[in-house]
Amino acid sequence: APGVFQLASLLVELDSSDEASRLLCADALYQLGRGEEAHKMLSLALSRNPQRAPVLARLALLQLKRGFVYDGNQLLKRVIRIGDSSCLLPILDIFQEEDRKLLQSHCRWRALAILKGKQEG
Image 1 (cartoon, rainbow, N blue to C red):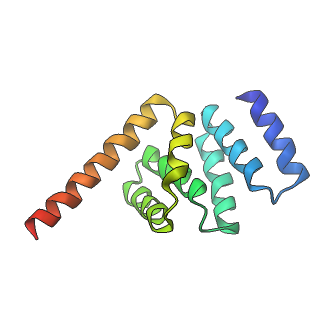
Image 2: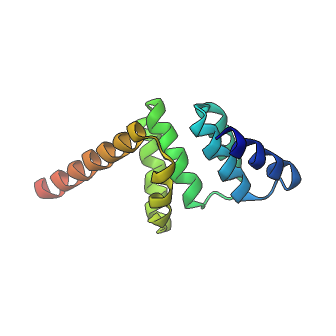
């Protein structure tokens, strides 16, 4: 992760508009345990393009990890509305095991709550 971060940082310096380099840099920061910095980088990327599902999905995980469940839910809803959930599978390879379990249990809990609400209605 340190080498990837250094390379991605150089790529971002060379072209600050390159979203792929920003995502790579944010992923490396996450792997290094620097979640706040990853969050800032992703927030900047989101401000430039608010409809990017890969950015939204990464931010959702970071929000859930920080305990901001409502914000995480809103970001996941945006990913679903965009219709590009294909970004979730590759991102899961980047997430640490404990965070994958957090996201899985959160999504399962929300799905059960939705199903329960429909059954009652």
